[in-house]
Image (cartoon, rainbow, N blue to C red; front, side):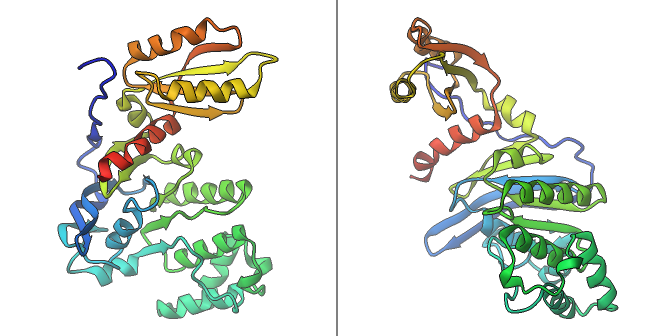
Length: 331
């Protein structure tokens, strides 16, 4: 491999424990709209009780894949099972055992929290609705707000209500499509604490997210771009198999921030540099060719305004580099 040439991405990593029962086991899922391929032969296996993170840029095919998994869309190609039910022939059975939380709040804003949950319970023809709704309100900390109109809730409370609606019928699988977009950090943390509690009780969760701190809380991850699955594995596996080397270039005390911005522009054009991420008063510089990266940074080491040291590659480094290839792959 020549200097500066990028190694191919490893693709999906082998799953540990292949004999485990899978909540999701699909192969070659493909969906087209006209001549446009939105999901391109995606294969995923998710063991029961895991939190599986689904990452990728907007328009990458995440939502379409989720809708095929929960029986809302029929794949044009591919096969597999969700909770043991065939995707093509048993979609209605899948819907009964899956909780699907969409990107946008989809409950009635002119109903109260309790009225919304009672409505959902009626849809599922649940027995003892009052008890089930009460228990769900208590679990999600909504009891004191049960009579508040949904339209008056903040983003975090709407998120909590949407999750409550997903849990009413005791699903075995949760499909969450960017559930924490637009909510504050505390609401995000509380939400993820609840997701981990549910997984500890045996529920399987597939969640799409743009937040790297949330990706790090998943047991396994997959990255999709232009409809194709590029990489899959645990967070540590994804980082290890990325082949990236990372350095941190920090601004020396008293340095001018404009110098750091100028250096970022300079390094983005340097051979061996695949990504440059501004991080406070420092830059994270990553590349696949460690020797070429060292050569690119050698002149920077000689400048007293900067301090250069080796850093640990993060998930954000990996996914920023993957995103940089989106136009090339899409073309």
